[in-house]
Length: 460
Image (cartoon, rainbow, N blue to C red; front, side):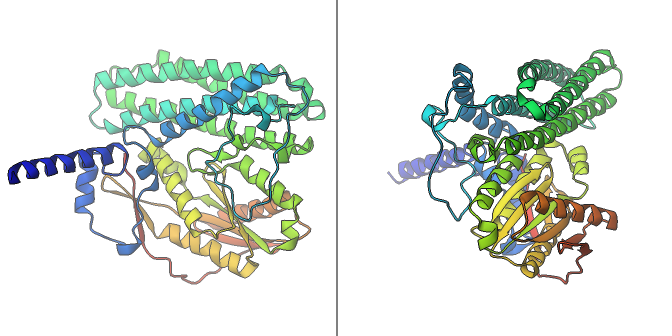
């Protein structure tokens, strides 16, 4: 009886461990388990766990997982919009009391409830959604191929190279079809933007540039020799993936800025669908979510009734991380940095991914002195953080900028001061912070603020 009980207990333990690993609550590989056992404990109680890893099944990359969720949540919305007359009267507008705290960025309206949707002039939103989905699908596929290539560097084999080559060709062809269709749908309606048709033409031009990059990559993949030197083939494929990534990011950023310009001009910034607010990689607000929320704050007069300050961070030399460690590692580090900033933020603060490797925070009930300290503390915390992946240590620093928000400010003037300050910080050298007092930007000479050493383990 005792032996039977012991056997059942061991089986339950094994099943529980297997379930934990499958759900992302355990080391996803033997290597990671060994790393966890051999960790030297540096950082002590300050060690941060990988938030990305605890929420994503280990058989899916972070970007793949988020793109699947994003597509599932938005797919039926696109069907709804395409089936309706774009110029019917709105079904209704959202209402509700203003919340002091930032809304949950993962929350989505029910796409099966059309009464929640204002379908008037939705073709811009629809085009953005379609392009975003196409970009995320392609990004997930490219990340998977990039990871496979990096895993065999130094011992590249013909079978893996051929498989990655075929996969990258297929991704380029699929993405080109999806992206071209979405771009054509948008291009056909540029004339409806009226005075802002020039902005629409900018989006169209960026789409054409990206299509040209995809076609160039396909041409290279069809003509290059990928057989005689396998390591050189590995490097060339990785370089082509990098070029595609840069083109995707340029399209995403220019598309968001153009969309916001159009929405603001047409007085629809406060009516942008919340589905467009979320950055699936970091689970923070994206640029659209940031500006949409700030529009609501300004409309309610929050910038006049409460003291506020803002900060903007730009990671230094982050492109080198993607180049040397791979896109998957870069994405996971971005997600960890986003969570690190969110953890430092106050309860009513607004945290967002401003663009690419830039992060923004609007601090509520915080004056310029405290804002400067907060900005410098986060930069020092990031500088003291080591990202560990398979025995390798990755360190990063950031440029920082801070400014006080005045009652006369608009979000645009706040962004302008922060961006001006970041340019000066970059000219001054790495790991610099600047404060803008409304007239000029000056470097911050900060003492050690006591940010403790920190370790974050990156799995995958």
